[in-house]
Length: 115
Length: 112
Image (cartoon, rainbow over all chains, first blue to last red; front, side):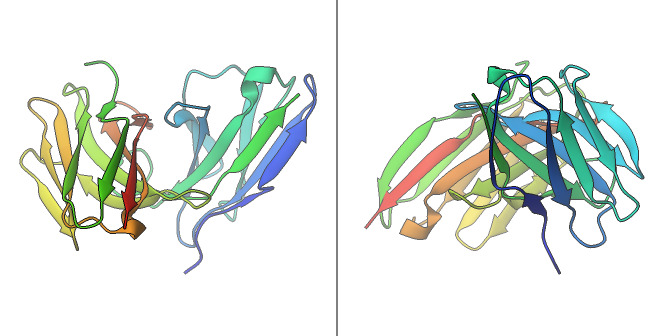
């Protein structure tokens, strides 16, 4: 059973640029959520995808967008990068949409630095 | 309580000590409480998911309890070992959304 894989592990971008982060979900999991962890904070919910549709969204601006593919892998896209976007981005997959009754399987994250 | 809060922020114990952490969460619209263990440079690993008031769960030397009426959960580690060193995150899930709401975590260091 494979876990959640995220790529790249580290990334440095310039303010104003665009970035795409990728996530392969655990085998059999159909729901993917993305979280942002800024320094000294707990992970913050960005959005969740289920069957290729955005299923819920946290308090993030529209320049944060995502995709989920038929194989349940996912991308997080961030446009017009700002310095405050520097953070660890975590992807988590789960068996069941929305309910939270099962533990999520997390990737080890992508560390994004915006300069 | 509007947010998930964890205490202490960090903890340093000697090998063999027992320890416990606290997680406070909003009790309204509660659905589930998650505990994760997160070692540096690795993925957060699910320890427990609890949904019912009075739930108690155990995995080896680690156990957790849940009080949904007053909005708190305790995580206990008996006989701490250096390999228990990690950040322990708790997160609540309400019945009206899709998000896990995380606390900032408790960082545990166990020295031999």
